[in-house]
Length: 162
Image (cartoon, rainbow, N blue to C red; front, side, top):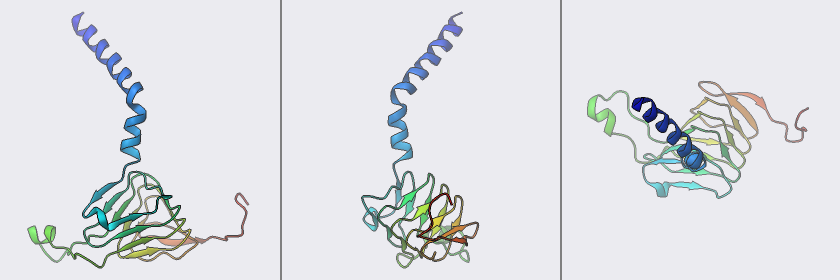
């Protein structure tokens, strides 16, 4: 009987804790970017929403423009490793510069997409969920796939839903 009461009390405590702190946990976990490297290399416009993106800044800066928004789990990576090296050298040697990522105004990046620098994503482009961007993306297109390829050109004058 005591074990049953302990389990019941534990369930009640977990439900109470979650109901009280669910909003706070979601805000911290789902809306806080993770930064690896020198934080001063990250420039995010105040109107952009990056959620829980991971920014690896070891090999260049990342710029995120106005009204850009990210789904959850996006990775923006500037730090490549040389596959020809082995052991500790492969892990520890990477270029300190030259792999910048520029995400222009109005870009939408779908959940779990990965952006590898160096690259520039043009204005109003859409990167599909789970895409792998390894090169520049033109403005006003939708890219998707691994590696990401243009699948549609956006007509800025088209009405939504038509």
